[in-house]
Image 1: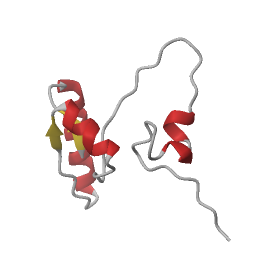
Image 2: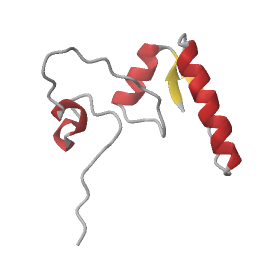
Image 3: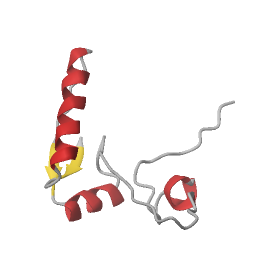
Image 4: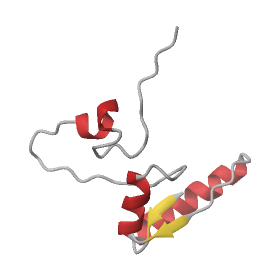
Length: 87
């Protein structure tokens, strides 16, 4: 689980997630990195799991930059969310 270092609350939550996942046989390795490195790895989509948070302004928010498939390579859509088409 990729996360930025220097954030004690996030580190504690990551530890809880790791401990709980272990109980059901899932191994999570916590990988703390400098925020600039985390952002770089996310932009390159070179991670399996990441712990992020977004802070939004009170102004209207356009979710396209975060969730639209078109934002996969040029937006802030780091998590590889894509709509699936099943036949």
